[in-house]
Amino acid sequence: MAIRSIVTYGHPALHSPAAPVADIDDGVRELIRDMVDTMYATSGIGLAAPQVGEPWRVIVIDLSLGEDAAQLIRMVNPEIVEQQGEQRHEEGCLSVPGYSGLPVRPARMRVRGLNPDGREQVVTATDLLARAFSHEIDHIEGRLFVDRLSPLKRDLLKRKLRRRIRQDDWER
Ligand code: NI
Image 1: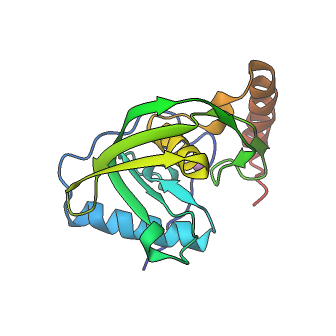
Image 2: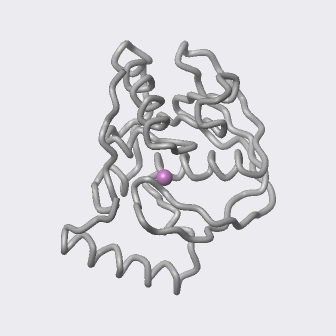
């Protein structure tokens, strides 16, 4: 079990698209295990590889916070097959500690990807699960919830975040 440190706003891995995984080898499987451990250790409901500084298209989600093994989703190279509607709820991100916002997310989405054994999996998600998929897939595209806020809120928050980076002062 290894808990990795989470990189924060301003780290290059969070702001550019991650690369597809060509081969799910032992290194990728270890990354996935570490991501699950790290998600549970930080009480997050999802984590994307760029958040631990690894620029690969890998996400993990567990709405049960580790209480129900059946709810753990580990997906390599996730792709949005279809999405419908809109929802807006308060959300935050482990990589933007201390801030939250009301981004617009799809109400329903269908996502396809590979599981750690390389088999295809398709998940249909609504409500919180749809938001979690949208949030984590955004991460592997180099986008954060900040980028989905209204222009006014986005600019205000980005100014605050840039000031934080300059002062090297993150509340955790
Ligand atoms: Ni996040």
